[in-house]
Length: 179
View (cartoon, helix red, strand yellow):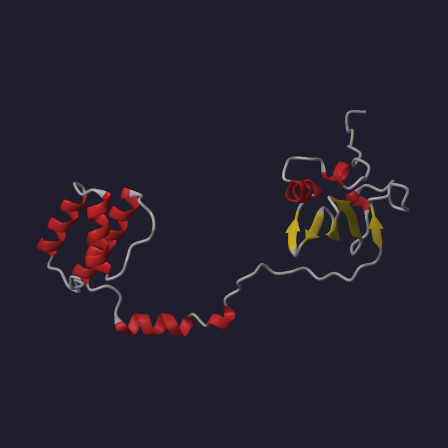
């Protein structure tokens, strides 16, 4: 196996960058091993490989990031501060509205008029789905905030469907200012 290149002069770098344009994907992947020292991604996208190799050649010419900057970046990037999952909404339930059975007490109340903390429960394909009302036109489903029930219905069933219809709730009345 060949050595990894660690430093290039500007002339060598310009020549390598110009040569990249005429290389086939197989040759670009060999160049990747030479410049990075490891196998490239599984991609066979020629433009992607050229862009990454051009970036690597420029870092070999200019020296890349300094040791001091790298140390500072590691100090700043405290892994305990990085949020890996979206913030989950925890609202204490006021009452549960099971809309699988339309005869329930809130079956005649549109979703926008339900009190904060109400849980809307719907049985769909053998699984109960619960949506929590967290504000006016704000709902939480599976820990993610949504602005409307339609987006949640779409997420659950996989296609566009009215949220009120999906959860067996009446449509929100429109304000007719033309009267």
